[in-house]
Image 1 (tube, rainbow, N blue to C red):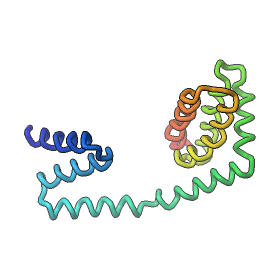
Image 2: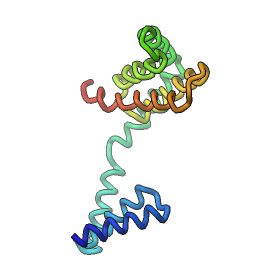
Image 3: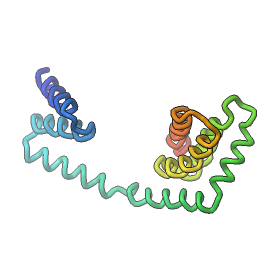
Length: 157
């Protein structure tokens, strides 16, 4: 029990000290692994995990998804998808906000990448909402809610 309190204490001290959340969690985890294993074993385990994450296939494919989103944006395809989605949901309350969700679903079916989605839908949807006078937090909330569809639809496709 005192071991878990010590790890939690290290994490809280780091967080209250202004250390980034990811770094604080990583350092607290390293401290916990050092207590469970030896220091040398902890360095070996953390090094292998970092290597596996850094050389994963996802990191190779991600720039290509972003490139595809940018090509779709520059070719005007996303503007047409956005306008079509706007006509489709125009009768619903908050039609333009619902357009972000609908366009996000279409783009999620194309890519399945939330980073490519954020780069593409965010650059199309937010300026349209800002131009029409929507509140900034409401507009960004709608765009962020549409981003969750990339995780829901992608495994289906």
